[in-house]
Length: 121
Image (cartoon, rainbow, N blue to C red; front, side, top):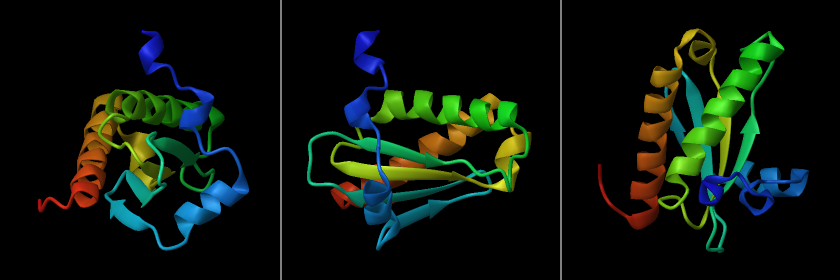
């Protein structure tokens, strides 16, 4: 279980790290999330989140989205090695159930991985 813990080195920690991802990042988008990703030149995948009040007014709802994103990232971080990823919420995420959120994120992780490895699909 400790292997899947969301460690400090698996997070984007400062504005500079977020800025690097926002500049010239590749993008994957659906009705629930926008995922920005960029190679980081390291062996670890790192996650940042920008869960906005604009699309999700209540703190309880924003916290649920963050928990789902972190959990999904933990399960897929091996496939995302060498990427910095920032997840932004869309209006559809607030009304979606957890399984729909996990399914959406799974698709995003697959796109990130296939783009990184040069696969088409």
